[in-house]
Length: 237
Image (cartoon, rainbow, N blue to C red; front, side, top):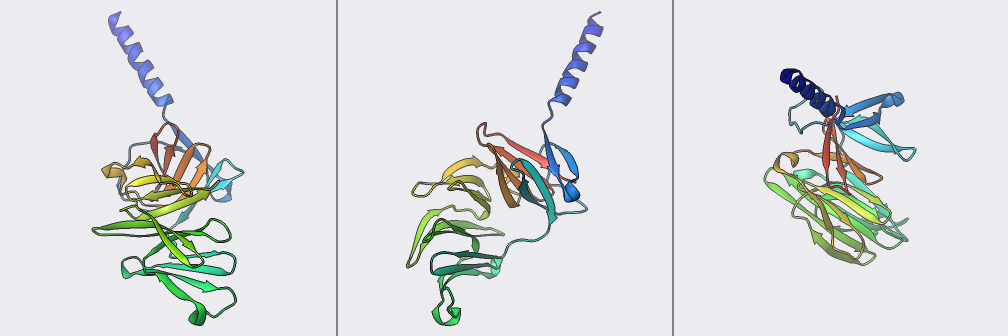
Protein backbone atom coordinates (compact mmCIF):
# COMPACT_ATOMS: atom_id res chain seq x y z
CA UNK A 1 0.00 0.00 0.00
CA UNK A 2 2.81 2.40 0.90
CA UNK A 3 4.55 1.50 -2.36
CA UNK A 4 1.43 2.35 -4.37
CA UNK A 5 1.03 5.70 -2.58
CA UNK A 6 4.70 6.53 -3.16
CA UNK A 7 4.43 5.59 -6.82
CA UNK A 8 1.29 7.71 -7.22
CA UNK A 9 3.00 10.68 -5.58
CA UNK A 10 6.03 10.30 -7.84
CA UNK A 11 3.85 10.21 -10.95
CA UNK A 12 1.93 13.29 -9.76
CA UNK A 13 5.16 15.23 -9.19
CA UNK A 14 6.47 14.27 -12.62
CA UNK A 15 3.24 15.27 -14.32
CA UNK A 16 3.14 18.58 -12.45
CA UNK A 17 6.76 19.39 -13.26
CA UNK A 18 6.22 18.59 -16.94
CA UNK A 19 3.08 20.70 -17.14
CA UNK A 20 4.80 23.68 -15.51
CA UNK A 21 7.55 23.97 -18.15
CA UNK A 22 7.49 27.54 -19.47
CA UNK A 23 6.83 27.90 -23.19
CA UNK A 24 6.99 30.68 -25.76
CA UNK A 25 5.00 30.85 -29.01
CA UNK A 26 6.83 32.33 -31.99
CA UNK A 27 6.06 32.91 -35.66
CA UNK A 28 8.53 32.14 -38.43
CA UNK A 29 8.55 32.74 -42.18
CA UNK A 30 5.17 32.18 -43.85
CA UNK A 31 3.77 32.73 -40.32
CA UNK A 32 4.44 29.15 -39.29
CA UNK A 33 4.07 28.80 -35.54
CA UNK A 34 6.49 27.10 -33.18
CA UNK A 35 6.33 26.45 -29.45
CA UNK A 36 9.66 26.85 -27.64
CA UNK A 37 10.38 25.32 -24.26
CA UNK A 38 12.47 27.09 -21.65
CA UNK A 39 15.63 25.25 -20.60
CA UNK A 40 18.95 25.82 -18.90
CA UNK A 41 21.41 27.93 -20.85
CA UNK A 42 23.69 25.83 -23.02
CA UNK A 43 26.72 27.11 -24.91
CA UNK A 44 26.83 24.10 -27.22
CA UNK A 45 27.44 25.14 -30.82
CA UNK A 46 24.68 24.20 -33.25
CA UNK A 47 25.36 22.61 -36.63
CA UNK A 48 23.33 25.46 -38.11
CA UNK A 49 24.28 28.58 -36.13
CA UNK A 50 22.16 31.69 -36.68
CA UNK A 51 20.97 34.73 -34.74
CA UNK A 52 17.30 35.35 -33.99
CA UNK A 53 16.19 38.67 -35.47
CA UNK A 54 13.00 39.54 -33.55
CA UNK A 55 10.08 41.75 -34.54
CA UNK A 56 6.61 42.32 -33.06
CA UNK A 57 3.49 41.54 -35.09
CA UNK A 58 0.06 42.89 -34.11
CA UNK A 59 1.40 44.12 -30.79
CA UNK A 60 1.87 40.71 -29.17
CA UNK A 61 3.21 38.16 -31.66
CA UNK A 62 6.94 37.42 -31.83
CA UNK A 63 8.21 37.04 -35.41
CA UNK A 64 11.61 35.36 -35.77
CA UNK A 65 13.90 35.52 -38.78
CA UNK A 66 17.28 33.83 -39.08
CA UNK A 67 20.18 36.24 -39.49
CA UNK A 68 23.97 36.18 -39.60
CA UNK A 69 24.35 39.93 -40.06
CA UNK A 70 25.53 42.53 -37.57
CA UNK A 71 24.61 46.18 -37.97
CA UNK A 72 27.79 48.13 -38.75
CA UNK A 73 26.42 51.54 -39.75
CA UNK A 74 23.95 53.82 -37.98
CA UNK A 75 22.12 57.01 -38.97
CA UNK A 76 20.01 59.68 -37.25
CA UNK A 77 18.72 63.01 -38.56
CA UNK A 78 17.44 66.04 -36.64
CA UNK A 79 16.49 69.62 -37.60
CA UNK A 80 19.30 70.67 -39.91
CA UNK A 81 22.07 68.17 -39.15
CA UNK A 82 22.53 64.42 -39.34
CA UNK A 83 24.79 61.83 -37.72
CA UNK A 84 26.46 58.80 -39.24
CA UNK A 85 28.09 56.13 -37.10
CA UNK A 86 30.41 53.30 -38.15
CA UNK A 87 31.47 50.20 -36.22
CA UNK A 88 34.48 48.28 -37.55
CA UNK A 89 34.97 46.23 -34.39
CA UNK A 90 38.59 45.89 -33.30
CA UNK A 91 39.64 47.96 -36.33
CA UNK A 92 37.99 51.11 -34.99
CA UNK A 93 34.99 53.28 -35.72
CA UNK A 94 33.71 56.84 -35.65
CA UNK A 95 30.69 59.14 -35.52
CA UNK A 96 30.35 62.01 -37.96
CA UNK A 97 28.10 65.06 -37.97
CA UNK A 98 27.00 66.73 -41.21
CA UNK A 99 24.61 69.40 -42.48
CA UNK A 100 21.60 68.49 -44.62
CA UNK A 101 22.12 69.07 -48.38
CA UNK A 102 25.79 69.93 -47.83
CA UNK A 103 28.84 67.98 -48.96
CA UNK A 104 30.15 66.04 -45.94
CA UNK A 105 33.74 66.53 -47.11
CA UNK A 106 33.22 70.31 -46.79
CA UNK A 107 30.78 70.77 -43.90
CA UNK A 108 31.01 67.43 -42.09
CA UNK A 109 33.23 66.52 -39.15
CA UNK A 110 34.21 63.48 -37.11
CA UNK A 111 33.03 64.21 -33.57
CA UNK A 112 33.65 60.90 -31.76
CA UNK A 113 36.43 58.43 -32.59
CA UNK A 114 34.85 55.33 -31.08
CA UNK A 115 32.93 52.32 -32.41
CA UNK A 116 29.29 53.33 -32.88
CA UNK A 117 26.74 50.88 -31.44
CA UNK A 118 23.64 52.99 -31.92
CA UNK A 119 22.17 56.43 -32.68
CA UNK A 120 18.78 57.18 -31.12
CA UNK A 121 16.80 60.31 -32.02
CA UNK A 122 15.30 61.84 -28.86
CA UNK A 123 13.72 64.95 -30.40
CA UNK A 124 14.44 67.44 -33.20
CA UNK A 125 17.65 68.55 -31.52
CA UNK A 126 19.08 65.72 -29.42
CA UNK A 127 20.44 62.27 -30.27
CA UNK A 128 21.66 59.57 -27.90
CA UNK A 129 24.85 57.78 -28.90
CA UNK A 130 26.01 54.34 -27.78
CA UNK A 131 29.65 53.38 -28.32
CA UNK A 132 31.67 50.36 -27.34
CA UNK A 133 33.97 47.46 -28.12
CA UNK A 134 33.81 43.87 -26.96
CA UNK A 135 36.81 41.95 -28.29
CA UNK A 136 39.14 39.48 -26.55
CA UNK A 137 39.96 41.08 -23.17
CA UNK A 138 38.48 44.46 -24.14
CA UNK A 139 34.96 45.22 -22.90
CA UNK A 140 33.94 48.88 -22.81
CA UNK A 141 31.06 51.15 -23.69
CA UNK A 142 29.60 54.61 -23.13
CA UNK A 143 26.40 56.63 -23.52
CA UNK A 144 26.52 60.18 -24.94
CA UNK A 145 24.03 62.94 -25.64
CA UNK A 146 24.69 64.77 -28.91
CA UNK A 147 23.46 68.30 -29.60
CA UNK A 148 23.92 70.58 -32.59
CA UNK A 149 27.15 71.93 -31.11
CA UNK A 150 27.72 69.77 -28.02
CA UNK A 151 28.78 66.29 -26.91
CA UNK A 152 28.09 65.15 -23.35
CA UNK A 153 29.21 61.84 -21.88
CA UNK A 154 26.29 60.61 -19.75
CA UNK A 155 27.42 57.20 -18.52
CA UNK A 156 30.30 54.72 -18.66
CA UNK A 157 29.00 51.14 -18.83
CA UNK A 158 32.47 49.58 -18.58
CA UNK A 159 30.94 46.95 -20.86
CA UNK A 160 30.06 46.84 -24.55
CA UNK A 161 26.47 47.61 -25.64
CA UNK A 162 25.15 44.86 -27.90
CA UNK A 163 21.57 45.85 -28.62
CA UNK A 164 19.04 48.50 -27.58
CA UNK A 165 15.38 49.49 -27.81
CA UNK A 166 13.92 53.02 -27.62
CA UNK A 167 10.26 52.84 -26.61
CA UNK A 168 7.96 55.25 -24.77
CA UNK A 169 10.92 57.56 -24.01
CA UNK A 170 12.82 54.75 -22.29
CA UNK A 171 16.07 53.32 -23.65
CA UNK A 172 16.64 49.63 -22.89
CA UNK A 173 20.22 48.48 -23.35
CA UNK A 174 21.88 45.08 -23.16
CA UNK A 175 25.63 45.13 -22.59
CA UNK A 176 27.93 42.15 -22.16
CA UNK A 177 27.18 41.89 -18.45
CA UNK A 178 23.98 43.86 -17.68
CA UNK A 179 20.52 44.94 -18.78
CA UNK A 180 19.75 48.66 -18.31
CA UNK A 181 16.86 51.07 -18.61
CA UNK A 182 17.50 54.78 -19.11
CA UNK A 183 15.29 57.87 -19.06
CA UNK A 184 16.44 61.31 -20.14
CA UNK A 185 18.00 63.35 -17.30
CA UNK A 186 18.18 60.29 -15.03
CA UNK A 187 20.88 57.76 -14.19
CA UNK A 188 20.69 54.40 -16.00
CA UNK A 189 19.09 51.67 -13.87
CA UNK A 190 20.51 48.14 -13.80
CA UNK A 191 17.59 45.80 -14.43
CA UNK A 192 19.61 42.60 -14.38
CA UNK A 193 23.23 41.51 -13.96
CA UNK A 194 24.15 38.42 -15.96
CA UNK A 195 25.82 35.41 -14.39
CA UNK A 196 29.13 34.19 -15.85
CA UNK A 197 27.53 31.62 -18.17
CA UNK A 198 24.94 34.17 -19.35
CA UNK A 199 27.57 36.74 -20.41
CA UNK A 200 28.52 34.60 -23.41
CA UNK A 201 25.09 35.05 -25.01
CA UNK A 202 25.42 37.69 -27.74
CA UNK A 203 22.19 39.40 -28.84
CA UNK A 204 21.36 41.27 -32.06
CA UNK A 205 17.72 42.27 -31.49
CA UNK A 206 15.52 43.45 -28.62
CA UNK A 207 11.74 43.79 -28.38
CA UNK A 208 9.32 44.51 -25.53
CA UNK A 209 5.91 42.94 -24.97
CA UNK A 210 4.04 43.91 -21.80
CA UNK A 211 6.53 43.52 -18.92
CA UNK A 212 8.97 41.25 -20.77
CA UNK A 213 12.07 42.06 -22.78
CA UNK A 214 12.96 39.51 -25.46
CA UNK A 215 16.50 39.32 -26.80
CA UNK A 216 17.21 37.62 -30.12
CA UNK A 217 20.45 35.73 -29.63
CA UNK A 218 22.58 32.93 -31.11
CA UNK A 219 20.27 29.93 -31.58
CA UNK A 220 17.89 31.14 -28.91
CA UNK A 221 15.79 33.84 -27.27
CA UNK A 222 16.30 35.35 -23.82
CA UNK A 223 13.25 36.59 -21.95
CA UNK A 224 13.64 38.95 -19.01
CA UNK A 225 10.55 39.69 -16.92
CA UNK A 226 10.88 43.19 -15.53
CA UNK A 227 8.27 42.70 -12.82
CA UNK A 228 9.59 39.38 -11.42
CA UNK A 229 13.27 39.76 -12.46
CA UNK A 230 13.18 36.21 -13.85
CA UNK A 231 15.32 35.22 -16.84
CA UNK A 232 14.35 32.44 -19.28
CA UNK A 233 16.24 30.86 -22.17
CA UNK A 234 14.42 29.36 -25.17
CA UNK A 235 16.59 27.38 -27.62
CA UNK A 236 15.58 27.79 -31.28
CA UNK A 237 16.38 24.93 -33.65
